[in-house]
Amino acid sequence: MKKTLVALAITGFLAACSSTPTEEPSKPAATPTAAAAPAAPAPAAPVQNLLYPPKGVGGALGQRSIYYTFDKYSIQDQYQPIVAAHSDFLVSHPAAKVILQGNCDERGSREYNLALGQRRADSVRKVMVAKGVKDSQIETVSFGKEKPHNPAHNKAAWAENRRTDIVYQGE
Amino acid sequence: MKNSLFRLMGLLLCLVTFASRAEVTLEIVTQGDHQIPIAVLPFADDSAGGNAIVPVVRADLVRSGLFSSVDATDIHPAPVDETQLNWDVWTGRHADYVVVGNVQVQSDQTIEVRFRVMDVATKVARLSTGFKGPLSQYRMVAHHVADAILENLTGYQGMFSSHIAYITKHRNQRSLKVADSDGYNEQTLITSNEPIISPRWSPDGTKMAYVSFEYQRPMVVVQTLATGRRRIVARFKGSNSAPAWLPDGKHLAVALTKDSHSQIYMINVDGTGAPQRLTFSSGIDTEPFFTADGKTMYFTSDRDGGPQIYRTELFSSDLPQRLTYGSTYAVSPRVSPDGKLLAFVQRDEGAFHVMLQDLATGQSQVMTDTTLDESPSFAPNGKYIMYSTQLQDRGILSIVSTDGRIRQRLTTQTGDVYEPVWGPLQ
Image (tube, rainbow over the protein chains, first blue to last red):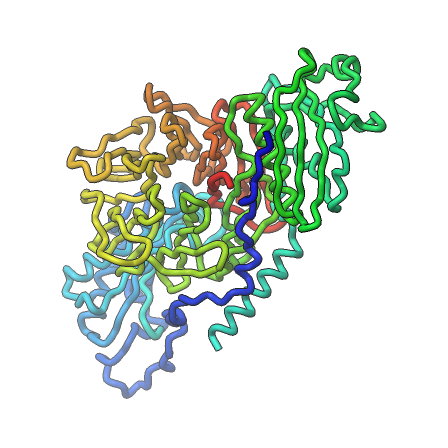
């Protein structure tokens, strides 16, 4: 009663190492922050050609992040002025474009957090579009809980990581 | 130039693989009360091929929490068939079973193991069988021996001859890896500086679907293990994630945000055709999981407020049925191979625990005492659940038996390990 297992092979993973992937897609697009960044705009440049609010600007326009409570994606009142300020900027600077990056804290499921981060980014987009920003000026992406700003495992880190970042192209 | 770069990367991965044989180490935390005492005697010519089978078999059996190993190291020469057994010795050592056997290495570099499981009480063979495989895969041959013993003496189906997959993260570098179920023979499928999540074995164990952020947003990739060939199977606008294989191995359910918020769709693995929408809600629907027959889909949805677990028959027009009511946050449904148990993660007073629900009664119980649990995955025999959690600020893998009595831990030497998923038996 001999049971023969010929197909024991773990289908040689080592073979994988010597073969060339045939369907590698084209090279990834450069990250937004690596895109050709113009040097600080010359003072004489027309203002509407600005691609992002100038550095050092104060007030709501100087802030780039909206924070959330656990498992929520609605924008709290205290962050509405930030979204409004960037919406105004985008309306008055049609060449400017943003990527809204949704993020979550480390607790719970990676996949649910990925969807939640997308909702966070989309909630900001919705307000911006309602304020007159063109759809073509906004991209959204979720990083879920995969790219925490603060890698610590405590309440302060979690609060910091539940966030939508407004990232200007070229900035 | 691009191709040669990838070839070079592949070569480097091979070198890394050879250098680290058991990067993941396994430790038994608690075990059950009633182990079966078994003596696995040294097999004749066991080290002929340079590596011994018996230590692997013993380690498997003990690791299961179902057996205790009766010492047999002091008996020389070790009996290699039942006619040489001194039964009084094994009765005196309270062994219920004694395993004797022999190993032959063939000229074609295959290894053949024959063994018998002897019942000490009756002096009769419970099992007499053998396995054969490439010498280079002697550990897998040993896992098959251990599975045969497990099946014969406990009625459990095998699990040692399975593989596991998981993701490691060291600094910014993430790697998707596969290994034997005991953490040995670790192989790296892909390494990236961008996140990788949700690895899922194809039903036949030859491919892996996973979510890669290498193009700055999540896309679903299917990689063939034997060749390393990768194909992006979902790259729609927005987020592409949460792959779940249908039993035919030709379709995947995925979560897409192409039509606005996250909903579940079915796609063809070969990239043909348009996605077919499977869920219709105004909230987040994600984390599909299919029963073994592929007819029933479990998933996570926040359609009623917070995330909860739902069940629906595929393509049914009935409203999905909600299964979890014990907390405001229940995610990551996985169903046991026999369809009777639901594992998921629940938030209770700020702590995230793996839960187990008896689907017949609806009763759920907390399975862990850790507080940041994720990603439960059933062993192929349904008797164990592997999951990731945190210990001393590091991501580790843990295993708990479905009766809660047996606990194990798998850790890496550096960095975090997470997203474990148990593959099918080989």
